[in-house]
Length: 322
Image 1 (cartoon, rainbow, N blue to C red):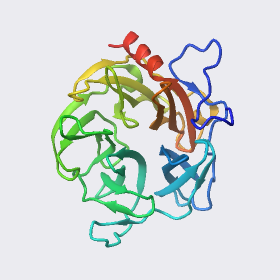
Image 2: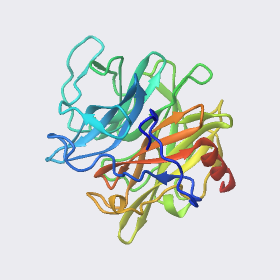
Image 3: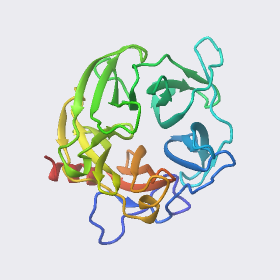
Image 4: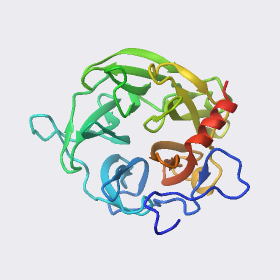
C-alpha cells in the first residue's frame, strides 16, 4: 500500500478473478489491541477529516462486548480508546450502561453521524444514537421491540423517508434470519415493515441472511453486501453475499447473487473464538475511482480488510443473479 494513498486500497493480485480480494496485511486488528479489549471485530469505519474514525466492538476479558471510538491516519493502523462510549438522552442525562453492545454500523447522514448497534433491551435489540464530534453521543429510545439486530441505515432519505434494514432474531444464537426494511419520518418512530430477502435460497445462506454495511448508492440502485449463514456438521459458516436493491423502493431486490462473494478460507477467518466467520460491517468508497474498502470481522476475533470496485461487484452480482 503506497504511503501517498489516503484511501486504504491494494490493487487486485494478478490473475485473481474473484469479486473481492483480501488485504495482504490482514488482519489489520489483531488480538489484545487495547488494555480493555481482548478482541476487536464487527466494527465500522468511515472517512473523517484527513483520516478515518470508527466505532469498534471490543470484547473484554469477561467476553462482554462494548463500544469504543478509534482513529486512524491510513485506515489500516488504528488507535482505539480504552474508554467505553457513554450515551446521553436528548436532555443531557447520562444513561445507565446496558449489559452488552455489539456490531455497530456508523452512518454519516445529513449533518450528523449515526451509530446503529445491537443493545441489551430484554434481549438483543437495535439502538440508535448520533454524534457530531465523537465525544458526546445522544441515544434515542429503542426503535423496535426486542428481539432484533443488524440495524443498517440508508445514507440518505428516499422519497422523503428514512429507511433501515434489520434482521429480526430471538434471545439466543438465532437459528433463523431474514432481511426486513422499515420506514421512518423522524428516525424515532418506525413502521411500514416489509420483507426484503429470505434465507434458504442458496446453500451458503441456508440458515439466515442479514444486512452488512451501509448500502452504496450506484446507478442501478443500492449495492448491498450481506452476511449469509450455513449450518454444517462442524458448526456455522458466515460468508459475504451481495444484492442490488431498487433505488426508489429499496424493499425490491433487482438482483440477488446466488454465489457468495467471499467465504472463510484464511487462518484468521477459519480459526478463532468463533471459527469460520466473515462478517462485513462497513465499506469506504472512493466515488471517483469506484474503489471499495471493506472492513469485516474474522472469526469473532480479528478485523480484516478486503477490496473490490463498484464495477467489479455489480458485474459479478448481475452475472450470477438468481
